Every structure is written in C-alpha cells, then in structure tokens.
Length: 319
Image 1 (cartoon, one colour):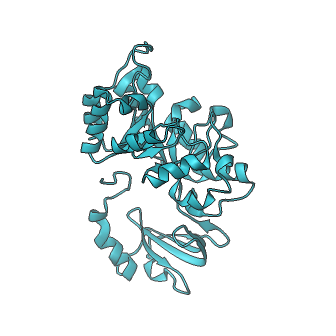
Image 2: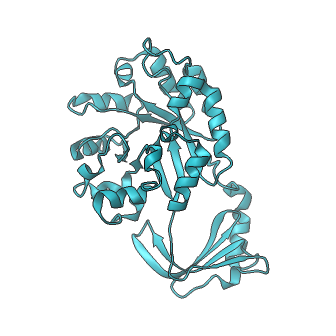
Image 3: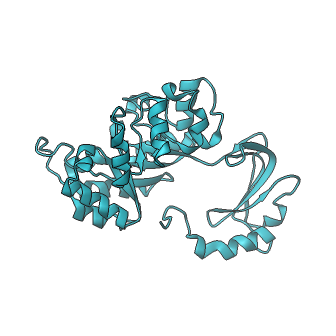
C-alpha cells in the first residue's frame, strides 16, 4: 500500500536524502544533541543529531558523529540538549466523534502530547451522514499535522432493520472508498455473526477490502467459542481490539492476527493485560475513544499507559 501521509513519496526524494546524508546538499532541519529513543533496539542514544529533508530523516549522527555537514545557510537548527527525540505515538483504533469534537479540534488536544497519527473509524458520522459526512470530516483533518488514517465503517447501519439513522454503506461503497488516499482499512466488522454465517453483503464488503490489499479490522468479543476466531480469521478478519484477558490476546496472536491492547473511555482493559502480557506490547497498540471531558488529562497513549501502570512503558514500541 502506498503511503499518502508523508510530505513527499520516497521515490520523489530518495536522491535528495542521499545527497543530504553525504553533505552535498543542506538539510531543511537539523536537531542537535538529542537523546534518541530507538524503538527497534530499545535503547536511548545520547547526544544524537538528526537531519531532516523533504519531511524525512536523511541522516542520524550518533556515537560521536554529528550532522554538521548537513547544515547550510537556510537550515533550521534546533538545540535539543536535555530533550528526547522519539517516533510519534499512533492511536490504533479510535472514534474521534465520540469525543464530541471534529478532527482538527481533536488534533489540537492530542498532538502536543506526542500523538502524530490515528487510525479512526468514523462510524457514528457515517450512520447519520453516510460517505459525504466522512468526506467532510476528513477534509477538516487535512488542516492539521495529525495523520488521520481512515478505516471505512463496515456496519452502516449498525443494526440492520433496527436503526433508522438514514444512511447505508454497502460493498459498492467500500469498493469506491478503498481508492481514497486516506483510507487504509475496513472499519471494525462488528457483525461477526454475519461473517461466521457467510452473509452475502457482509462478506462482499470484506472481499472488496481484500481485493484492494487493505486490512479488515475486526470486533470479536466471544472468546469462549474456540472455533469462532479461526473461522473469522480464515474469512479475512486480520485484526481485533476486543480482547478482555491475556488468554484472549494470546489466542488471536497465535492465529496471526494483529491485536490491540485497549484502554478506552468505555472499556478499560489495559490493567488486566499488564504486567503478564507486557512482553507482547511491541506487537500491540492502544485503542481509545475518550470523551471530551477526558481529553485534557488523558490525551495520548503515553498518558494512558502511565495512568494504568504508574510508569512509562518498558517498551517504547508499545506506543
């Protein structure tokens, strides 16, 4: 899948990145003397320089090496002595509209706390306003530095034959939206009975997602049925945030599913997983849906982890 969320596609700027790294062209930005949090090796690298060009890291100076050769007349230089540099937090599952604000206002609350990207399922907006409402919502997101990656709602209406909210999304709509630049997945498939039963319309939505090489996100909360997770996974569900115990997490991971450890405004499961499953944290993310009243005090995955555990994450890649 092509990443549409960077300032420039890599194929447009890879030559420039090499020139900057070699000192043949100045960087746009150089951060000096930072303490770099390496989420791959679980290290904190002291006195590190980072050169940025075209919105991407072009050079990292560490172990006595600096980025002096990347600095030109118009390069912005930031002295980060005593500060940490780390990748941004990614919220793996959220319904922004549950916070009773739009994406731009939500970004105003969470970006200062280190959240740079969200995977958001706008199913409440879609239930009322359909795809047009989703488009308007994410036109608003383009005005912000927050990367809003959309998972298109799969269950609109949420309960067929019961709700009268006025909108509907079917397989043809899913096929259309899978071509949108900001769409990365199918939103949580709450109708897991329809998946298990091979319901035509539901399965067609999954097929259109898989044809587009996108992820099908799931919503499965009946762990006592041993064969059901396997049947869901074989039908295309690759991801789930509905786990209530460590055993639920393990059962899904063993099938090859992506599992999110959830700490939301409604279901606050994270303390149940920790510390026993903290060793799994590098393969999981935090899902949250915070109401407006909680945004100022718990507005990032970092804050959520500390609130649950009383300490920062032992693995930076968790967040």
